[in-house]
Every structure is written in C-alpha cells, then in structure tokens.
Amino acid sequence: RLMNSNSTSLVVSLDLMEAVVADMSRDGRDVMEEAMQLLDLSSEPPKLQFDLMNRRFSLVSPQKDNQNRGSERDQGNQSRSSSLLDINSNYFGSSDDKVNMLMQRYALIHQRLMRNEHFKPRLVQSDSDNVRKITPIEGLLGSSGDKILLGIIVQVEEGQYYLEDPTAQIHMDLSMAELVSDGYMTEHSICLVEGAMVDGVLAVKKIGHPIYESRSDAIAAIGLQNSDIFGAIPTITELARLKDEEEKNWSEGLFVILSDVHLDDSIVLEKLELLFQGYHEFEVLPVFIFMGDFASRYPSAVIDNANTTTAGYFDELGTIICKYPRLAEEGRFILVPGQNDPGVGSVLPRPKIPDFFTHGLRSKVRHVHMTSNPCRLRYFSKEILIGRVDVLTKLRRNSILSPDISLKMDKDSHVIEEKKRDAEKEGTNPHVKHAIKTMMDQGHLCPVPSSSLPIYWNYDHLLRLYPPPSAVILGDKSAERYFETYGDDCDFLNPGPFYADHGFLFFRPVDLETKSKMKSDVEFSFV
Image 1 (cartoon, rainbow, N blue to C red):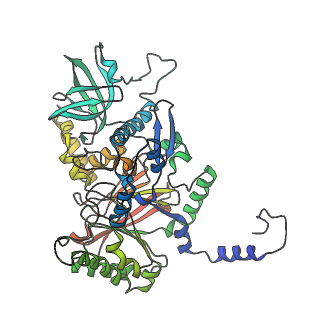
Image 2 (cartoon, rainbow, N blue to C red):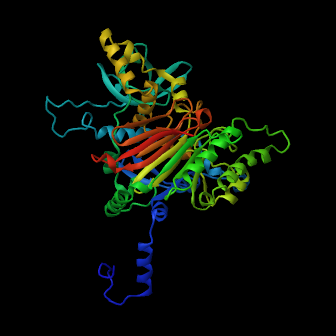
Image 3 (cartoon, one colour):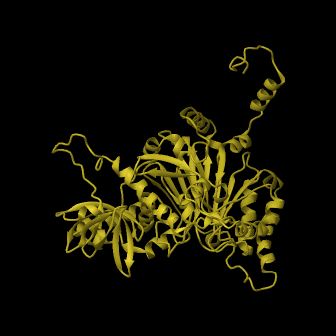
C-alpha cells in the first residue's frame, strides 16, 4: 500500500494504517454500501435534454430549468403541501412545461434516428445506398408521392387522429394503415409513418415504432457525463474501476423483489415472516424491494382513526422484521408506493408514502428507504429503474392499432401459423413482449395519453427509458410474472402480485457464471 501511494515519505503513518485495516476488514456489507445509490423524485435528479438547434445534449436540474423559464411559485402553498403531502409546488408545471415534455420526447427519438444507418444523411450518396429521408410535415405542402415522416399521434377531435412534429400537424387516415412493427400504437406515441397526401389528408400506408438504440450506443452518442444522472461516473477511468469492482464482487449483489404486498392480509404477513426467516442468516443480506399497493383496501378517510389504522399496517411490518434483529439492524428495505397507497392521487411520478404513515416502521428498522414511484437505483455501473405501474392494461386499453393487425394482414396462412408457433415456444405472453417493445422503442415507461395516466410534466424524465437502463423492475399485476431481455442489454422483470400466490423474484444484476458475457441471474420462487 505504501509503495502504491503517491506519498514520497516511507514513514508508516496512522492514516495509512487505518486505510490498510479498513481494506483488510472490508466485507460484503461495505461493498453493497459503496455500490448502491438511490435516486427518486425528492432527489431532484437532473434531466437529459437535447437541443434540436445546436444538436447538443445537456443535463439540466429541474429546479434550474424552472427558474430559466421564469416559473413563479406560491411559497405559502409550497410549505403547506410539503408538510402535509410530501410534495412541493414545483411539481405542478405550466402549459410550457407540457410542450417542453413532448418536444423532448420527440427530440430524443429524432436524434437517435438521424444516427441510424437507415436515416443517417450521407455527404455523397450513391444509388446502392438504402437511405430513407424523413420529411417534416410542413414539407408535405405541394408534394406528391410517398413520404416518410416522424411525429407524435394526437387526437385533435373525437376519433380524429393527427400527426404532429415541431413544424406542423396533419390529419391522418389510418383506415388502410399497416402496422409494420410489433408493439402497441397509442395516442402520444411517436411513430414513423409512410404515406401520401390525398385531398389534404395524409393517407397512411405503413406505420411503426422508431428503431431501438442499445444502451452502449446511446451512451457513446450522449457522452458519459450527460448520461450519468447519478453523478457517480465522471470519467471513463471511473467507469472502468466500477466494472472491475463489479466483476470482483458480483456475488454480493442480491435483491429480493415483491409487488402488491398487502399488509392488511394476515396470510401475507405470515408469508413475509417465513421469507425473512429464510434470508436473515445470509452472510450478505439481500436488498428487499417491496412495491405497493400495500393494502387490499384502505379504510375510508371519513372513518375515525383511518390514518392510524393505515399507519398500523406499516408498523406491523416493522414488528415482523424486528423478530430478526440482524435484518432490523443491517437489512436494507426499499418501499415503492402503488397507485392506491396513501399520498397524492395517481399522478406519476408518485411521491413517497407520507412520513406520518411510516413513522413506526422507520423507527424500528434502521435502513428503510421510502421512495417515489418510479425510482432509480445504481448498482456499480448498472442503472436499474423500479416502477409500479399496470402498463400492459393501459397500453391495450389505449391502443389505436393493435399488433394483432400485423397477423391479419399476412395473406399466407402458413405465415400466421408460424408466428403463433414461435410465440408459444418462447413461453412469455406475446402481449407482454409487445408491451416491452413499445416501452423501449418509445423510450418511456408508459407512453399513453395523460387522460389515462396523468404525469407531472416537469418530471416526465423520471419515466424515460433513454438511454436504456440496465434493468427495469416493473410491478405490473395485469401481467403474469416474467423475465425478458430486450436488445441483449436491458432486462425486464415482473415479480407478479405477492398476495395472489406468494411468489417473489430473486435478482442478481451480474452473473459471471454464464462465462460468455455478464448477464443477470434471475430466479422466481414462492414462500
């Protein structure tokens, strides 16, 4: 240690001895402490922005962004909201914030398409180049023939859909449209459209989702500094160091994930006690991730002591954990609220459960992290998004064009049968695969209209999936439990509702036993 240090002195100092002892006594708990970093709504994480004019990325903090746009906040309302509901008035943006939200969704997809080999402009173009040109909507004026456009689907009139980009909007006729990609096409989806103008209306022939870009390609284009929202990987050297640590300590990172943990159900509480009993003697304790809803039915607010009853659910969870002192002292618990848990409505990102309800739990268990929905977790160099949203139901309910249409348009019956056989062999519900593709291609956790899922416009970036995270842990009770890898570099995991069959998910972000390359180790289990 002395020879490797930058010190010119050969004297063994007290500081050097302390550093050596710390290194020698370093164990799995220290590794997990250093490896993990949690970001949620209260952390005010920076958001990635792309300037269409300057063609440049930047990381901007939401507070600074609000100040730059000259937003005025009522400080009195802010203090009252913060004390009662754990929110502040910065969450509620202006109409400009909604425009900026949609513009950034469009800009991030447009820039990645412009780097794709199918759309990337060439300085010298030959006849053999298979390059397609994206035409702005205002460029349709006076044009003829088929054009390719990129825009967001909006419903200006009831049942009448328009395609909109930063230049203009145009009415679309989707009656003859062929969905050429898997996934659900909903209002507010950003899509590639091929069609021609007919009597002032864009007659759509083909429509599909934007082309996906892998995590490594996205980070290479954005730059390490602009893609690191955690502020933990400032240089390539630091990234390499984290990956080395990841390889050395890959077996230490254990996560036990449960969704829909109904604390008002006595059977669920019994199963939780059995779960803790099985893990409390592990040399390195796992990180427990619990997602809501945390009750099957909360007492009505008009009933006396309703808040006390709700707080009692979390207090009971703390009592069960305290039966295993090591878990209560050293274990880490992350609680992500569901849509029906105590707090502020169903707007995403949803703030954490108010402290009033979780005071008993937090006083009994040392490391309890009450987070927003969704939140992000850094484990060494990996970025993990954790969210509790019934995505599949919302996508299917709001779908304008269903992926099943692509089956109906296959004229050859053997093609249809082949697709059906492939879906059956792969095991996972094909609707789940369509939902995952929709999220990843759109770069958003739930790309549906605000009427179906309201969003705080200022904080839409917390729901982004661009650049793609290393893993997405999604509590979606509308779909069965699953584990899927999209694009070879992003894992999707759904543990399923715990209250239904007491199943949970065991997750290790890095599994070097696969030898070929670092993949996640995922196992489904039951109590």
